[in-house]
Length: 396
Image 1 (tube, rainbow, N blue to C red):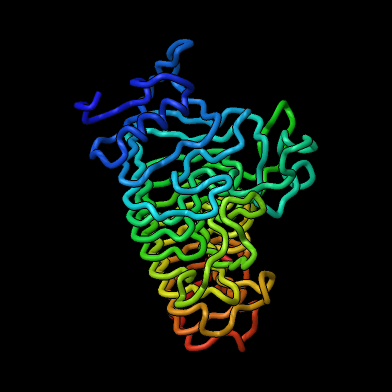
Image 2 (image 1 turned 60 degrees about the vertical axis):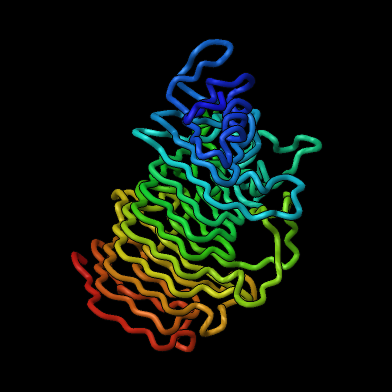
């Protein structure tokens, strides 16, 4: 086996996820790649689906190729679809990884469970606001947490995730924490905030598509399509000084760290070619930071609202909010944001809910809905040096 340049889970023994993780561990740092094929040669017989009872663990210096395959969380799984191997339950010190790459060939589907044990973020109680078969089960956490995220990377430098479809995720589809120098490309989402479970439609909250969290920088997000139950693309820098890495009390696995020198700022991010909408009626793209973490040097170029007639999103782009942390972020903490080429029929096209300065917004068309192209919900005292050009309202 040491002479193979390509490893597949079909070369190993055990459950589906055990075989995948054995292949990844064997290939890590060797230059060999791991390929998950469409055909799963399971011990009980071949099938065209890979059922995951726990997360696929991605080591550093790894390339994982998904070849026309279907990966699905089993009903017994309360874990991610995939996460970087440096983090997890009880891991209080996360060692950085380098060069983690996941890409699909052809049609690749990553899917949530038929009956999820838990859904939603850490602010949601199972069975009250969001579905989970663990609701009321003794010994099981009764809130959502980072395990509900589809693909979770923490402290990874040099990464790529591309050409995947994520459907019915249990929380955010892809979440990055303190990751840098990477690309998310050709990603399609299909989550609606609702799911038919045992003949009854159930609520599943916090189904964002992509989230960049504290400390993410130098990242390209390109070609995002489909629909999500919550924000389709979100950059959220919300410090939690009490966060503990590896604990289940948070939707962040990496906890808190010293915020000196702007280490937890979100910066140097380009978002291009977003064609989609929020089926749950929230925002298509959201930029949010609170006091203690800055968000700066961001480009959004190309956002097309593809919502059907029966769906009206809250905003195509929302910047800032007064409902988090200590309220509106200090003027200057959300800065150097360039937004261009937006077409929207949302309730609000560009919604300024917090502070914004030294920024530019141009080439925005609002159609099929009355109202202003720009909405300043936080008040003019929170905006400084903002250049606005070529805004159009059509078909009102």
